[in-house]
Image (tube, rainbow, N blue to C red; front, top):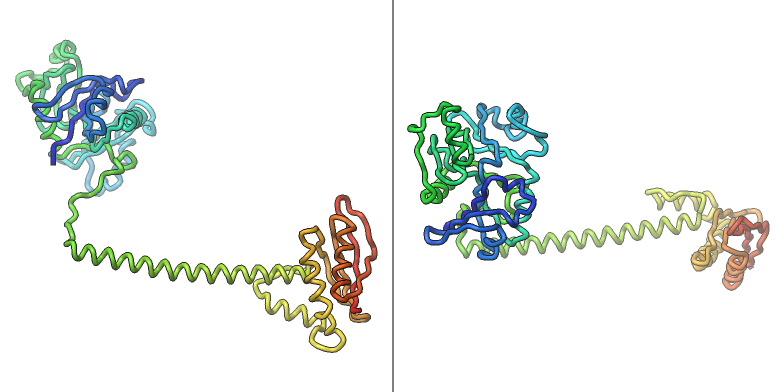
Length: 382
């Protein structure tokens, strides 16, 4: 596998208004490296997969000392542990932690919005970001170290680093009471190999949790033999198909049962508008019929009358004819219907339909109710 392209940003990358114009440097191989704007790099290497190397000047490099037990909740407590070192609202910052080293967890903190904006710009330019790190963190195992780039990078120790122009750094030696002779130096030609070496050791990865690239997948899974893999795929497909068919049948049967229950409930409420259908609809039907005396005697006429009445009402439902109450009068074996309709013509249509069904219907107590009319209709067998 070829080495990733290293794309190095100078300080200020997380604060730039136009990330496309940022000055960057890149290293593909010892024979292929260069510098220019971010847009120029994207044009030179369209669709490239890159590893970002950010400047420590845009980050707070520090560390915290915790036991392994305390470290279980490190991501939650880190903003509070670093509160005295932070400037700004912790909610607006991005925290990244490295592996335990000498009893300390190294940490990097930066502006969340700036990092998200830069990643979005890289995506718009067609670049795919695989990893992102900070220069001082990649070189911290070499501390104390001075990198002779511009601006110069001074790594005092593993969790302390400065990025300053050379003339400012010269003025700080005495102020910081640092021994120059104790610092190793790294010239620009040796910087790229040192950064690549740092990527191969324990370092802090900036892209984690919600910023982790979606394309990253584990690559250390042992490969299954092709024969077993094909068998597993076939078995999985058959199992999925079997479950899908069973689920589809169960869903279809359930849907048909729900539909039948809904139709039965609708019919019940059509027959008995003043009563509400319950889950025990069959028993409810039997109870209502028993109340009406439909089992025998003269009251058996109820069903003879009710069947054509229900059919006629159902046919005129679209015309706005709705029953409000149905009563069976055992004294003269007649049905009394309290009805509402959009107009008197709807009531006449019902009366005509009942007459066509062999019944005798009379309209009484007709009255207007705003946009609708109400009436009582008496139905007898002919």
